[in-house]
Length: 252
Image (cartoon, rainbow, N blue to C red; front, side, top):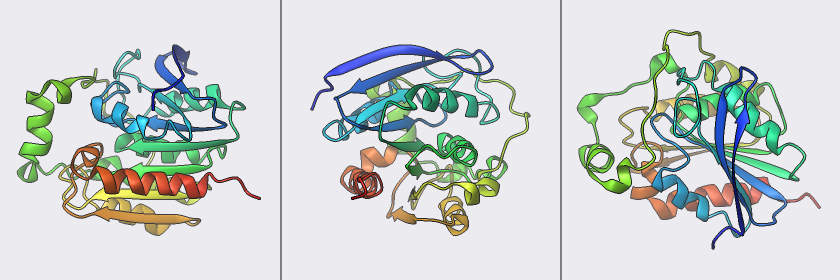
């Protein structure tokens, strides 16, 4: 399905950073917000392909975190990106009956930290999300050479919409593991069993501290974040769609 209307625009954060967005409008009363991870953007091929799976039931809103894609500023490694997500959610507030948030990797960390403070998102999916930035594994010796490095560096599809502009990494960062018990939205955690960047123990730790409706899915032999879309598309998309269909359903 192709979106009926696609609106492209720019939002301004509380600290005056411009955030570029794309809003797919299919005249639905529910919306899915996609928050990408590090070194990614709303234009990355795997994420734009993923968005299409929701067009039959939802509108979709995608944006670039600061220092990524067409947004301004420099990436602050989750220290300031909460303002970017807040700008997106503020823009959507009042436009829909239900809002789902699908977040990847460090975008998931930002999402947990934001939803600990605001409660207008009705469902959250965190994919390969670190529980604490300082404890990211990043085990180079387990690098997925074929599925990750080769795809990203040596294919046109893998390079498109990728990259970032780094800012200071020493700024104080909130820890999702300290905030997850304040999140009131139902949370689905998805993690690849062989994620070489962020090991599955992160999602397991977050799952244990989540106090309300929750589910944990570890995809066998699965890689990191959006690469699950490439390697385990049917299972990955199916889990997400089923979760949103259940948690965003109208209460009768």
